[in-house]
Amino acid sequence: MKQRNEYDDIIDLPHHVSTKRPQMPLGDRAAQFSPFSALSGYDDAVREAGRHTDSKKDLGEEEKEKLDKKLQYLSEKSDEHPSLTVTCFIRDAKKPGGAYAEKSGILKNINECERYLLLTDGTRIPLDDIKDIESVSFRDMF
Image (cartoon, rainbow, N blue to C red; front, side, top):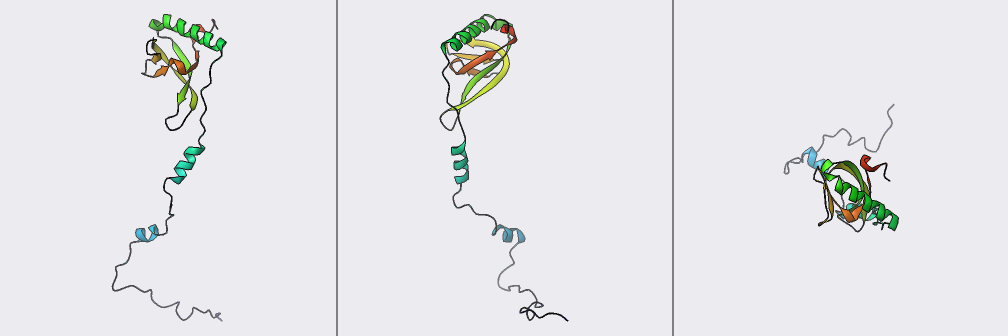
């Protein structure tokens, strides 16, 4: 014996279809239930504010002397195009500070007037943003 339900009287009725309005396509019906963001861009702003940047560290006198010697040596050997890895500070485009990163490549030249180191792939590294330089060329020297 089937148990009675309060909707038994309407459960078998045909689905109502309006004669005055066309049926909404399924894609549009689904869109009306999609999540809504009242503050568009808010999540991006919160993510950006929470993104960590470092400040540029000043080198000590010993580190400056060592870096100057390495740059002098590389300047003398730039026509040999030594390969090197440079640890440098990269400024953040959106907020104060930045991050330290390593860039590897082959030295093309050092422009002392405009104060940058140029790699053969076109990368320019400002001399003032260099923290350290490693190269097979002077591993025994330092």
